[in-house]
Length: 77
Image (cartoon, rainbow, N blue to C red; front, side, top):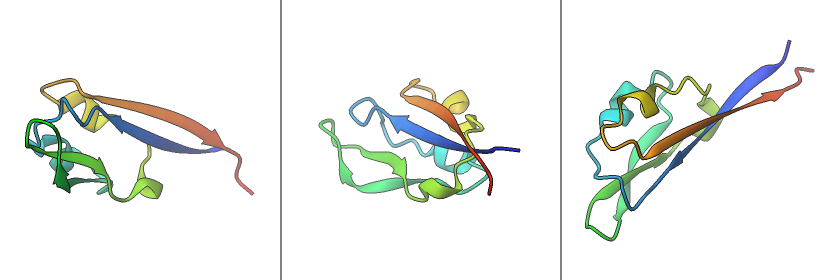
């Protein structure tokens, strides 16, 4: 059986740092950056990328639809 890992891609310029995605992530993958985007908001980023399962909870709850989630299968050894 293959292991599935996810990758979260966040449009940093559209993110307003509402933190809804950070709270909704069951694996603790996302966090707010200490840097700010062009609008002055701290944006979300993958702080713990190896823990992502690709569940897409973050993308579903994002009010600005600035998150895309991709899943990739890796063979188990």
